[in-house]
Amino acid sequence: MRTKLISALCIGAAFLYFSISCNAQFPPPAGQAGSTAIFKDSVIIVGWATGCVVQRGYINLFDTSLTYDGDNKANFGTEGSALGKADEAPVSLGDGGYAILTFDHPVTNGPGYDFAVFENGLSDTFLELGFVEVSSDGVNYFRFPAVSLTQTSKQITTFGTLDATKIDNLAGKYRVDYGTPFDLALLDGTPGLDITRITHIKIIDAVGSIKPSIARYDSQGNIVNDPWPTPFNTGGFDLDAVGVLHFSYSTGDQVLYLYPNPVIDRITINLFIGSIFDIVIHDISGKMVWEKKGLPNNSTIDLTFLSSGIYFCTFTLENGTTVEKKIVRI
Image 1 (tube, rainbow, N blue to C red):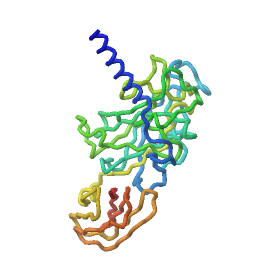
Image 2: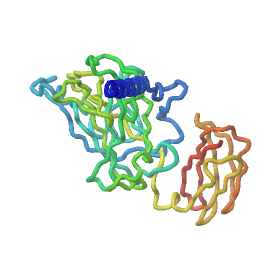
Image 3: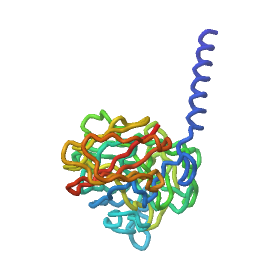
Image 4: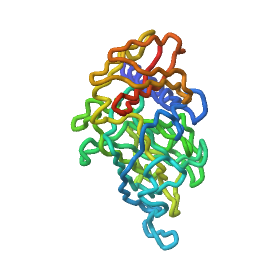
């Protein structure tokens, strides 16, 4: 009886965990309350990828003999299609294909999200997903802990739909023109990775098939189920761009600090070299809410006029260097 009771309790606990997991709600599509989608014209994007190498995948990994216009691999777009600002002209990776992006400056871990990946999804529900990995040496890559809670009992068909609230840390979560953001802090402490100097970002098509022989799995062991097969030259993840929110500069970020951040009322700017020519604060929608010129080192600013929320500061130093910082008013 005791054994049966313990077994029943274990089964009940497992069922509760399963129920909670299946009903977990991640951020919703772009434009909805709570969404983390970043629009391509957002002022928080300070730069874009400047280098790209692509390894194409098959149009159908389960049957590599299949071709589209004589080619058994995706071939839409070029490596250059993933460079610069998102423009709705992507490069298609194919089943399991990947792209490695590089930048003029290393990407660094800053407050909040650090970069965003733009896919070419046609709507809030037709989504093609990709894993995201980062490297600080171009050799060793480390994957963000992706989660897919989409059911795996039935294949999402070629033009099927997904629910963004069941997807986390997978690129392609948001529709065209809206980037899926990633926070390097999630990988803090990973041996072999310096999250303050990310030199390479890799985007890997998640395939999307639930066939065991070619299925891909998330960080919790779930199969990633997305529209499949996509036996066209545009098959797989369609990478439009990678936008950066925080760069590690040789100057600027190393000499300007803000504290405390988050801020309740007053924030101090600690500049170790020179002085500030101009500071502009924008709200999360991109609207300028404050500007001040000619601030000396160690200036303290009263921010009680700001409502609670996230803001973005652009500092122009006297030598022309521009530094971007995010502040949180609580």
